[in-house]
Image (cartoon, rainbow, N blue to C red; front, side, top):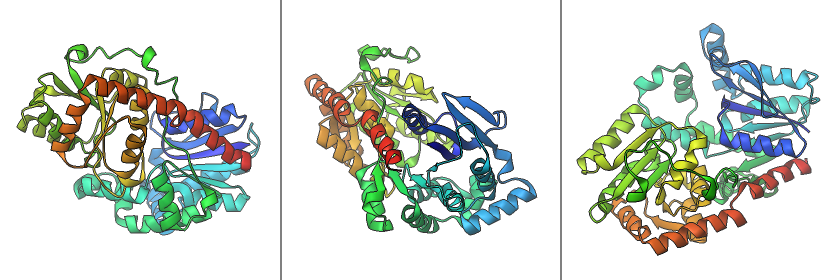
Amino acid sequence: MHICMLLPERFPPDVRVEKEAATLRAAGHEITLLCRGGPAEPTFERIDGIDVQRLPVDELFTGPRGLVDGARYVATAVHPVWRRELEKLADEDLPGGSIDAIHVHDLPLVKTALAVGENHDVPVIADLHENYPEAVRQIHRMRGWREIARDPEDLIQRIFLSPTRLKRLERHAVRNAERTITVCEEARAHYLRDCGAAPERVTIVSNTVDLDAFDPDATDSPTDLDFDPDDSFVISYVGNFTEHRGLDTLIEGVAQLAKTRSDAQLVLVGKGNEGYVTGLERLARSLGVRDRLTLTGWVDFDDVPGYIAASDVCAVPHAATAHTETTVPHKLFQYMAMGVPVLATDVAPLARIVSRTGCGRVAPAGDGAAIGRALNELADPDRARECGENGRRAVEHRYSWAHDGARLRAIYDEL
């Protein structure tokens, strides 16, 4: 088949898209990826066997044409620019043949894909990585109007694409797509219960990892830390820094642990809003652990395994929200694959997997003292070793991309 993937963000990097495209390519499918482009990026590029076609971002929501297109998008949820480009791909005689399926990533462009799919009699696969309406609700809470107003696209979406309207779009998407892909059992239950999706048309393809990329026996620790990991008890977090990630309670937990562990160090690998990061630093200072906190900034994905390997515990301290209760992050499986004990909060997908596999400890979300106690339990070498081994064993036998990639291939085999 010739599959057109539709991605509303830039590429690369996108770990999930890369894994899915590689799996489908290995199964003999041709992949064309239509995505957003940056000012200096080529409009066409071939990357690892994928034909990547980019839309310049300055054509989407700027100038009189952009304003008109934006107004049409918020009125219909079908974006004119993306639709025009997708129609061109559907009409062109491409090297891989005509498009046989549209695989659209995330909710914003699903209705656009459905419109083109109906026009060309092409099935649409909606790959919904997260509970998008609730994710938008979280973003609205974090960002003030002054910040949003500086970005015309964000401003239009903030005014006209409310979480309530996005929920209606979500129901339309899962009822009309040929298949819906989601990332965990809780999300699938949400689409069946709240959106009226047919059970046979919703498949879980989770955010698991390629075990070759996360091999604890073939990974070196980073050399840019200001302390020696071998002489410290290292707690790490990998990912974006936003309020619903619960990094404030993780800092509170480390402060609690530091009362009995003088060697405790917290490493936050990633980046976030400057004001939020400043607030984390201020909190750490007020709790007397600023000298134990390392903020690495953005790191290349290839360097992530090294930071995990240097850790004694890795954390997923998510706050409890409607968003976190229906998604599961890549980082959980990355930690498990590296054989590192996991500290997770009791949001449903995390608690279920950590408890089921015995790969770590679960603490109540938002409870810094409880996180500190859980970290102290994982400081026991025998318990930590058992949890790490349980996690690695679980990804080898169940939670790996080998299994989820097979489910993805099966969807296209059925089509």
